Image 1: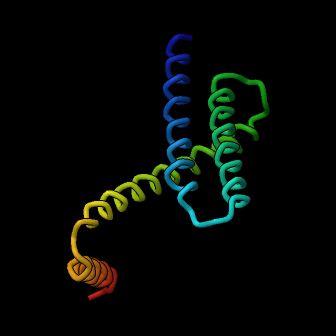
Image 2: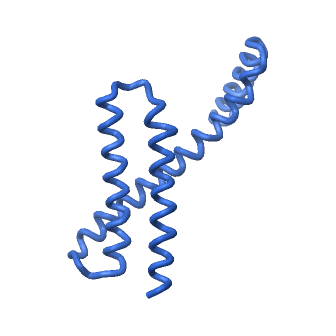
Length: 124
């Protein structure tokens, strides 16, 4: 029972931090209307609630099995959010490191990165 409680606590803390960071770093930075941001925030926290229900259902038999599979979809959505958040933070760090470089050097770096990206996608 203690292992389940520790797992549940760590799980809850990790996914709360993930959803909180996604809300503050990504959703609040979008150039959308406040209504759209509030809808996205509501959907994000609903996903967090489904994550919690997934763990509750995992260790209890309160609901039918179909709900377990429905709640497990929210874990996949959270994984996609994690990947997006990591990529967003890496690009944000890269952008901050280029702020002190003049515009012509930034344009050169952008062209080199884009050219390298497109050449890696095209078949030889």
